[in-house]
Length: 150
Image (tube, rainbow, N blue to C red; front, side):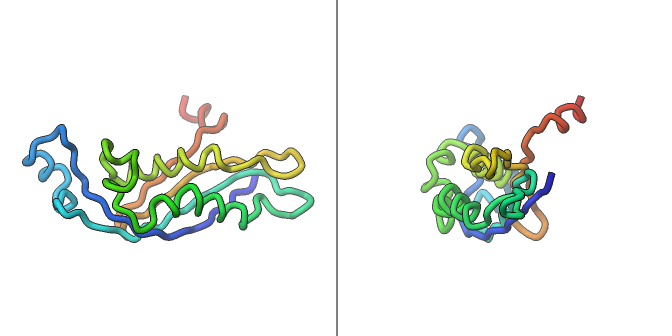
């Protein structure tokens, strides 16, 4: 098994706010990130796919294909957007970076096609860095990971 990680950058704004909470609770939980006008981040996205090396190409996965998938499924939807206003799934869900990481993983999970010669390539993980201090990772389940967690 070989792992390929590709990095992408995008910028997006958001406001961390939960309508179920009071104004005081939102300020306490989200602090300055609850600014009514929102704020933005320059995100660093890491997408890792895993699979065997295709003997015909010598690669785990074609980078041009991966770039196309990430651009279509993620960057075109999130780059230079207000997550609260422009992204349907975040109109009722708090757009924390944790939730954004999960959303990106879900968008990519079924978009990574099977590798050449019947070899299976899968999305292994999505990492999302919000700031130099905060980063998040969503890791897919594999049989080995399921056994390790038992």
